[in-house]
Length: 267
Image 1 (cartoon, rainbow, N blue to C red):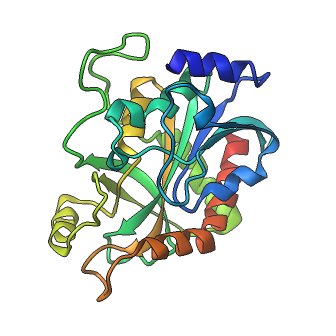
Image 2 (cartoon, rainbow, N blue to C red):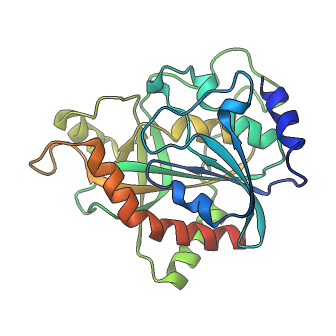
Image 3 (tube, rainbow, N blue to C red):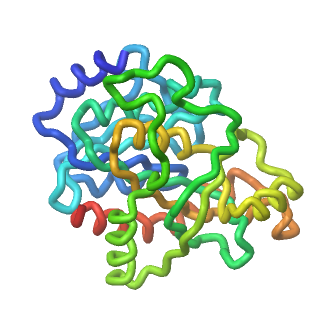
């Protein structure tokens, strides 16, 4: 199915994307900055998953961003949507086989670190896989990577330095921290958030970890950001809502988009 998707896409575009970008909840607006865009809906690709989460358009956008050839996923796939882990990373593997060497991942996340506030941008330095499974379980595909890929530098140190430099030049304050991935779709309980804080997590979400594992398996260089769209359960005396996540993404997402535009031009 992925090979078929790659062949279909190659017939529609005449370049190899250098960098792939996954746009999380409320962050799809970056795709509007892509010049000479070619849009390919996931539904056009036979057997391909489709996005069902709110705020996820569900298409690839190929073109030029800050002078570099890029491919954006305007919407991703989640384990909680009922997809298998293998389906969740279909987009990442498709982009790798199209030639992308770099992957920028964004997500909307709940803040666990009590020093964070809604609207903060967190540069992910590491992650904790709390999803209870791993995308690489099963027979290994040697054409993608080795059986036991190293995850010591899952979030590329060189790309993180570029990100910090660009943030400084744009005068954008960024936090740094560890992301913990859970399956969802229910938000976490206050007791779970207290436990995650003890484990060393700074933000929590329902995506990213499978994609980063798959990208490292393929030896893609990974850079990732969380937009802290709400504080996690129990930190503030209020319930969590999907509307809050999308509203904060719309309000603060533009700042993260400008940062990624600049980073893309320097990768």
